[in-house]
Amino acid sequence: MILELARSKEKDIVSLRRLLHQHPEVAHREFQTHKILLEHLERLDAEIRAPIAGTGIVVNIKGKKGGKTVALRADIDALPIKEENDVPYKSLNDGFMHACGHDAHMSMVYGAALILSEMRDNLPGNVRLIFQPAEEEGTVGGAKPMIEEGALEGVDYILGMHVWPELPEGTVGYRSGPFFAAADTFTLDIIGKGGHGAKPDMTVDPIVVSSRVIEALQTISSREIDPLEPVVVTVGSIHGGTAQNIIPDRVEMKGTVRTMNPVTRERMEETMRRIIGGVTSSARASFSLNYIYGYPVLINDKDVTEIVRSNLENLIGKEKVVEAKQTMGGEDFAYYLQKVPGTFLLLGVYNEKLGYVNSVHTSRFNLNESILPFGSAIFVSAALELFKH
Image 1 (cartoon, rainbow, N blue to C red):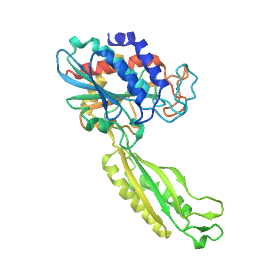
Image 2 (cartoon, one colour):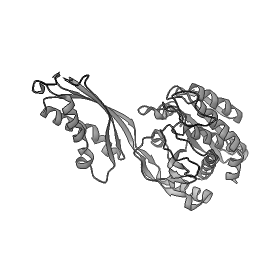
Image 3 (cartoon, rainbow, N blue to C red):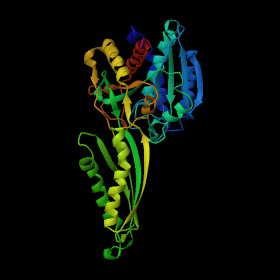
Image 4 (cartoon, rainbow, N blue to C red):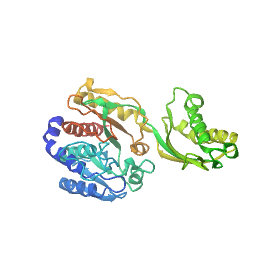
């Protein structure tokens, strides 16, 4: 029944997805996206609050029978990536692309809203749609400001979902407990003493010291943390020097730290400072570390995840519902889960036969649009089930 209803909305869902895909906008600048969403959401005859947290939108679909409130969240920002897909709905904003599937997330939540609006007279609860900016921003993000401006007031449960090319199309991944990692970042300056490249004895070479620091940081996961605890320390950017025969005064590095355990996360900055300090002092250098705390660990509520898992098995079949692996990626849906119980799902979109095999955050990421009503049905079915609990 719900799957059939969702399939009947496929034209509207796909049409919105293509329109959004053509107008990708990065974090905090989703102005056209905001306008497009409002034009579609105003057709629902629902209570709309906009703007919120900059370019966000909150919509309330109130059931005639009252009851609990379930929130459905969609992120709305895109990435600074030039699209290489040759499709009729290719990005019109050169250098920007919905390479993480947020256009799919928005359209799936919209599809769910179309269905739930038609069910309003018999709806045993209320649904709140949360269209949130700046998920890709990485530090403050958009979820936290949305919460601070009241997006979760009165919400009993929250659901989120991400299209996932690591799972076969049509499967759904769930996981109870820690799922996505805390995503912190850092900027590190190694400060030495510059000079002539032919006279290294008269300098303190920050490039050599930087190489030692990078190697030493890798011992955190191998020697400082329980080997069963997932930890990643990556230096993704390093800059220093201007010429082949000049030793520079300093080297700048930027990186990310990923942890799956909040307790482990609390140790990381102090551990890094101790290790970096030891390496630099032994080489007569110094350092400056700016450690920035980003999104926390995303921890799915055990009870809600079990309710949704069971509901999914009834909706699409047990064989299509799989326990997903933990991922060291970050997701600011974690902030919502710190406030209300909920769960975050992964919707498989990998389809080798049709050529949908590319990862998110790449210039050729795309998906089979027929999966979008399927995602809408999952949201609707899960919300209806949660009304009972």
